[in-house]
Image (tube, rainbow, N blue to C red; front, side):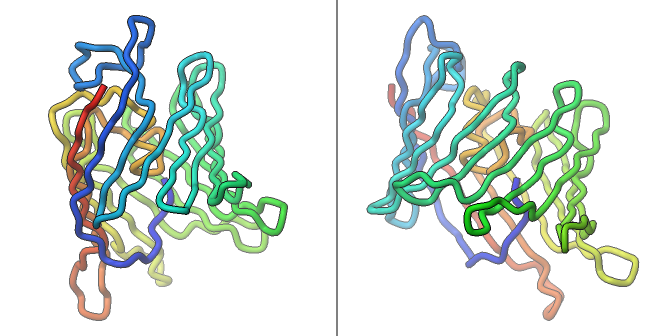
Length: 250
């Protein structure tokens, strides 16, 4: 999960269409979320604000997604995923053109099957520089806090943290706090996520939507609302407010 960047306000309904291949040998979950069929998603079509993008999913021999390639008009972008022997995502590399030159990557570290650290790198003219580190704390099996560290002159500087609120195994609330420069913290971002009742069988889809392959969710999200604190007017302002509508086609 990347930390928040200032974005234009987005209020929209996003249509999500899954096109699947189904086989008795496939084991990545049912196409209707109920497990009646076993399918693998080959294509994801997104429609938002009149713009349509199509993403194709490539799998390895172990039926794990290893590349998601997205085309929107003449624009091409995508992600490549690497795994450890336990099936955990250890690296995500991103490209932004048809040459598939990697310009950004994330490295994941796990302890006892739980992600404990994520490092973020960006391309600096052919070499990758570390720009941010996130470290995870747990309460039992649930993430309780993510500490945020910026990299300045090669040194880590903690600047904030994120907390989660859970409902039935899914994160329904996220709150980000940042150093106020006076020994305290300021609540700068809050996020509310609503889900449907379909069991989430395509876990990689969370990386597709939320840029986090380990995002704690048990069902498919139907709304993602993000707000930031406007300190000038002392009010919460909508940053993004997205509704997801799903169509299954196999």
